[in-house]
Image (tube, rainbow, N blue to C red; front, side, top):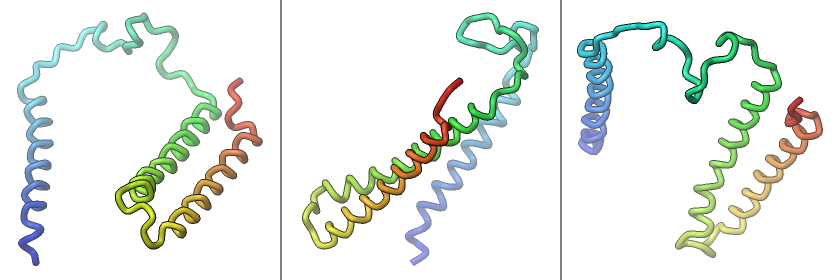
Length: 124
């Protein structure tokens, strides 16, 4: 039974060694020559305006967190779509799968309407 995990162990060791090796090689082989131009923030080829340490509004972080939450939640639709619309469409349990996903989408819609009504998506 443990023989089935040997390739996974080798892959994990290879990935870890590759990551450590690439980081070590970049520190050992790279000659760092800092200059004031290299230390300035790069903003699409434009010279930076103001300080790089400006404070952002809490609204910015709220919108960013909401995007991440709704983005991750909608990723759960991909496996459902693959099963529901795949080769096994119409098989046993598809009605339950449809109802389960409709409940999930309803909860997601209620959350979206809630943050919309609270004004979290308004940008001033």
